[in-house]
Length: 105
Image (cartoon, rainbow, N blue to C red; front, side, top):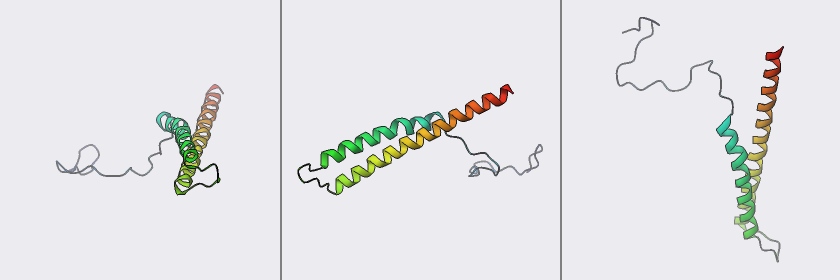
């Protein structure tokens, strides 16, 4: 059975939908929720990692155990998330300004 409009075969009832995106589909740009996760979640993760790192650190000897190293790594990951979010947010703002300027011209 072929579809009269497009000429493509119609799948039988109950068949799973085709997976994946068709070629030529543009990739979505990071917006609202993704930026909020990076800009809010990053500092929260960094703060939590820093607090946990400091709680495991022995200030008398200056040494940190394995847990302290892991928590220090979490701090670095959170800081990186925040910085990436700032760069993406800046790119979105610059793109919006350039698009507004192009529409005026």
